[in-house]
Image (spheres, rainbow, N blue to C red):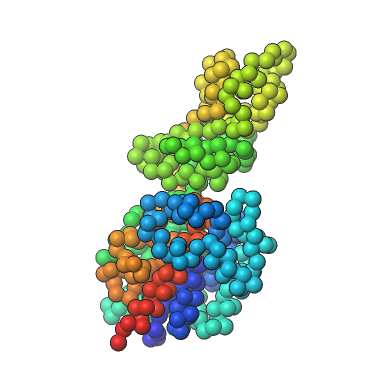
Length: 404
């Protein structure tokens, strides 16, 4: 098969690349390894599809850390309000939640994905499922494994949007790393991001409190704090509050062997107020009941105090008040990348030009989570996938239009 442009990967970055190419009059072919498109997109939307975030844009662009400077042009061209307008154009209304996150009004991913794929098909996108990309042959043709056997496709230009390495059962298995490295592409090792961490719990916590949410709480690490919540698991901790700090926590563990996350279990009370409350007469109440009555701390929060603070702390109310405001939670290791919501690392920006084309592979563009960027949950992940997919699609169209 000889075609004008191929897109490999049917997630949000690949679909947005298709949209950008088609807006310029091109008719791409999209290939995906799975039986249907957007499987990780659908899974992410099971708990409510968070498309993007409405916070002040100058703050929004800081959420991508060191990679923000590389992403800035793409984000500027498709900021959060443009994403909401795009969804509206597909007939999917959005709203802004109290957290500032932007959702479809029904919270669901499936209606948006169906409308998007129908729109693309109606406008000429050709979709090939069950086509697992394996690299290039000696003539430069794309190679695929299909149910009918090996297949090759000669494309003038290609957009790779193959995802990272999280949730590999949904298609993002990082099998693209070897073919790209074999052709000289620089790839930063992939690592778990927006992930949980292991804690050496005692059986009391792991058996009695697995699945218990901890909220409200302020989580702090390395000078950064986030108010939110997290969940105790049988092996450690996970949840949005942890994910917001995951990159720094992971890096510290890789360097030092562990990281200490600080927890403020009473974010609405000062240490002085807590000390005053704890200094009241206990009379005949058990310490657990006394703690609950005067501080509101019980259940999993009380268990965390017992788990993480020295025993002698409970004999000194000033020390206990301070401890409640700064519970040291020692994290031992990140959970496996297969369990993570997203992955860090990927194709290095130094190997890409400003149009997302690989510098040493003319006509080959990269987009989405397979690029070396990282961001917390909250709409930032999808925002960057949409934005880089669009940028790579425009880049591929511009390159094709400049060819003889």
